[in-house]
Image (cartoon, rainbow, N blue to C red):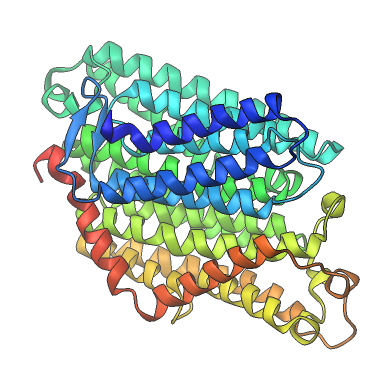
Length: 475
């Protein structure tokens, strides 16, 4: 019970939030305060368990280790930033923070799953609230985004569940950490199709090519705080659970799946960033950019070595901080109730460098980190991914990372070019309204992004410790 206390705190906060909405309806915003405190408390409690001895709990269906604790902290950061970006927005219902907390709870469950049951429950728990949150703007675009996300999410869940059924039929167990001892005499005609379907179901959530086309429409139609949660938190949960399933259950067969995932990763990096190039809507650009970043994360899995696991975990934090910073800028430019009815375009950034230099600096830091420019966290993350690829003797993966980075650089420079245009200042920039919560998010994200780029050693130390999750396979 002690090891599940962060999840219990978040679940309890969601319940208290619902009770506050029903019992004290006149106190607007009470549920948001309750859930913000709950997420902060869960993060503090998870940090106190850092030196825990790795073990399996709940009938071997959950692992308690530093890797899972790191995942918990990342998704709580995504949840807290989402609540702050939506703070005092009148067009979000009182149920908004509760739905965010429930989605975060599903992501937390994925961080330590070692059985197919918590995998499926976690994915559904993170997805179902997001289907509702995507439509929380009550506009035609929001409804379209929610419908697309729901239909494709249900489709991917069906594929995932069918794959799990095949894996169970092949191995007679749902505990995938037990698969290494079973795979040699399992029913291969069920095992490999089952694994393929499970991987496809998860890569839908991760937005790997060719299962990526839902992303830009859903990002554009969803409210910006919700897009922030999708872009950061969902990637953390999906990437980590794919790593756990393959590293724990099928490590002995890495030669069969590692090369295929690597090719998919390279294709995803290049295609995502190429499609980002012609975009004029900033959220669509970030949607395609997110597809490219999913490819970078997949490299960490495809290398099937401890350096890849460390690199993927390291990459997630600077990517998440940069995403938070950029979405915070978009949120500020939207300027309050109804401001999201027209998306922020590159034209809306005109003159920002001269009219709002501090805001321009924030967007610049986020975009340069996405691009992997030195002295940002994104550069260090990409460096470790290249290093992991070379350790795995996969120079093709390293070349793919470089090519994907160069293509992405062209896309990320377009918003910066728009900010420095001198032919007038856009109405969005001129009438932008500051928000205290938004300023807090921006400061933390920018300081974190630059801090990791300039002095990455503390995070490197934490990540190297977290990779002790390999104790489960004895590696």
